[in-house]
Length: 98
Image (cartoon, rainbow, N blue to C red; front, side, top):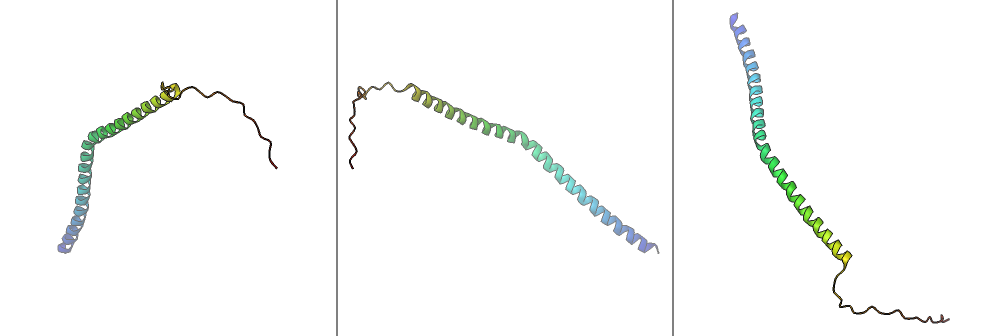
């Protein structure tokens, strides 16, 4: 009579042990993954700041070039090759032909 009871208890123990063991393995894997990501965060943060700095430098250079182009256009060039400006002349209007 004790033999079936021992077999049932053994099977229940094995099922519970498998469930606890798989839960422990899953928790251990999660912890290891967490530690791996935690160690990689400073490098990723440094890389992100380097990318942001690169974009900021490019935006600054573009802004300076645009400012220089606007300032140059506002001042005008010193080149006087166009010669004197034409004088206004009176225009005669012709009557409309029908």
